[in-house]
Image 1 (spheres, one colour):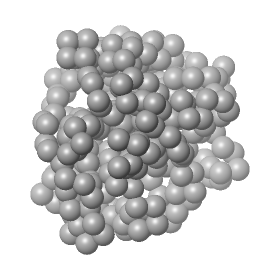
Image 2 (spheres, helix red, strand yellow):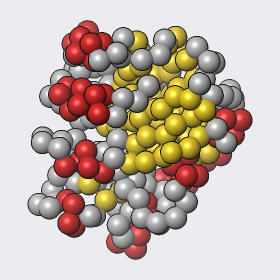
Image 3 (spheres, one colour):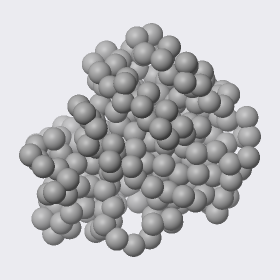
Length: 262
């Protein structure tokens, strides 16, 4: 049975519960992974989601910051979480579907403004987080798994609106791209979005600072769907729902979708 999965940095799930419910009604993914929920788990607005069929939830949260949740129409088994770089943040959670597929939901640290760990602690934390992801995937190489989330890195030249201008901007610096690539290689992960859409500029995030984000189109592809090689060939129908960025009081991220025939 095929299932469709979506990932979305919601930038406060309580503030934007109505947008989550709208996406559930209009697009109805079987599994919806949210990042930056900014809420303790006990305060997540789950009743409205359950009423739309999303009765299964595996989540980790904290007050005001971070937070990840997997909302599903399909039964889930909680597989726990990892505190990479010992930040004490709710940035990862994993769950298993009844078909044996493991889903990892990540919210990688943004990394602050300056791409230099000597002057910016947050940038160092981001690199350390990615290094520990790499080491974990080396030690426990994943199988039959999907990794999604806001990884806060746009790795390819066509994942940003201007490669040359962004080379020294956090999220597209060579050292970040290298660290993300090492984590991807360690786990044998396949970038499903680019497997399906191999060519052309593709973005999932547009800054709130732009007065007309759509016309300016200064985007970055920060949100990703990966799968292990053993199931990557089952994936198809990847898409970024750009129009969602234009909904009223939106997140600055758009949802990213993929379907798996598993």
